[in-house]
Length: 312
Image (cartoon, rainbow, N blue to C red; front, side):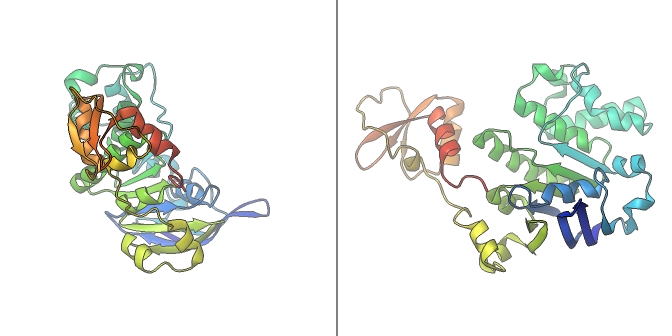
């Protein structure tokens, strides 16, 4: 579907991407990851020619990207940014319909596709289709950004750190939604992130960059069991699949006897499960060996935000 052959991108004498070669298969969720400035976003943007390459070849559907008219190729490649950039004076429905309308879809077909995707993304069309972006939360706007990239049914979707601005709990929810959506739509997705946990969760395969060069390409399991070198091993570190429990969040809290009205949970409850309680309660009481300790929604956000090693 997408292939890089000895691709280099130079800015003056500096190589932002250095002799990169890989192939993304049709229907694959392919994650580009690496430290800041490692070349992952530059690589993503070369796919749809937002950035021109310096040396080498990039193929899309077995044809060099330079052989396509830019507008023709970009119609076949959806693009989701960290900054959503919805048109503020258009309704949600009008935002989503932009590319189908440019491709000459009939109004009925465009409306049907818009409603279908909104439902898949958990946005009730009757409620949201005529609203303006400012009337939606940040998370809802991000959903619209994803939906808009899928509107014209492109075979490929590029995603440049689309969830990095979201709070940790919302981000994890979006990751789950994207996995579910990918199972339904089976697109070829190239996804940039700096978060190894996100890469391990989402990717069929992962491509790790360092200073413009590819250090390793492989499945999450291959990265866990067979890191290619010390850099790969250190980059993965201890971030892989650590189970976090409610007890982790209240380790520095004081014991209290005042738990009237609070639901009681065990300290070994997985925080993902415990968090479902916060749809109804602002605070829960965690049973620890020392006694009950109170846990609030804000405690979770604070813990995840300040936790050492939370981002790469």
